[in-house]
Amino acid sequence: MMDNEEGMSLVEHLGELRKRIIWVLLVLVGGMVIGIIVAQPLITYLISIPPANAFSLKAFSPWDSIKIYMNFALVTGLIITLPFSLYQVWSFLKPGLREEEQKASLIFIPFAFLLFLIGLAFAYFVVFKMAFFFTSEISGRLNLEEMYGISQYFTFMFNIVLPISLIFELPIVIMFLTKLRILNPARLQKLRRYAYMLLVIIAAMITPPDLLSAVIVALPMILLYEFSVLLSGGVYRKQLIKDKEWEEEFGSK
Image (cartoon, rainbow, N blue to C red; front, side):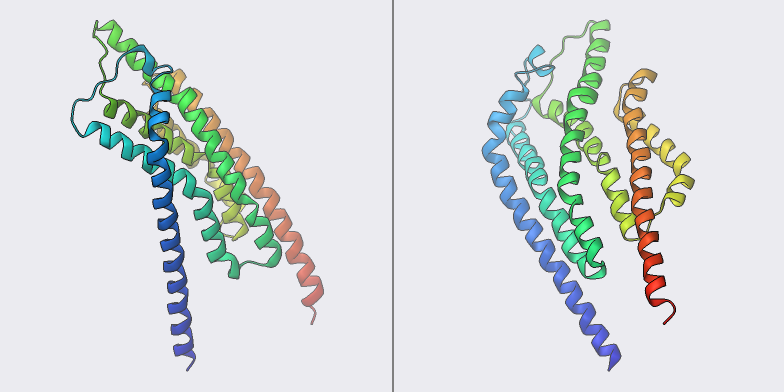
């Protein structure tokens, strides 16, 4: 009988997960519709400011314009869906959290969205421009005329901007995993050297091949990791205090 109840519980759990995924996909579709509507003014704005305004973007294929519209629609949809997706994750995990943990973890959602936007701005205005001006300088040294396809230009931009924006979610992810008692400050400190190595590798991969550019990108990432360790420490200390209070109240009974 107990096995059947556990089986039903698992089925219901998976059913709830499926329902939340469907809602996220529906919101994503709605966000993509909005993305298609705002794609033209966004594209027009981005090609009117540096570095795109230094040359004329070309369409090398009849599908280039459609591809760019769909790329902007997808990225816009993902940005719009992000806070809703985070809320769905929180709602799914909510039954396994204590009441104070539910309230505390819910606050993570607006901060996660804010950090994503900050990462987006840093990635575009610092890393992407730095990378693009570096490639332009190399083209100039080789006496090459810069003529870029609009699809290649924005693909290059998205390949840099989106990964960095996601990395800026690191403090929120670490705090949330600490709340769930999966991570703690001691474990993060043990992983520090590997985290630094990974962040430096990522910075070297998405920046021009020179030391200064890699340092400019890697330094904020490393600071984000250290900030995450500090936040994790604050969350972990509160957990220890709560555990001690619980033991004092119920441990002797």
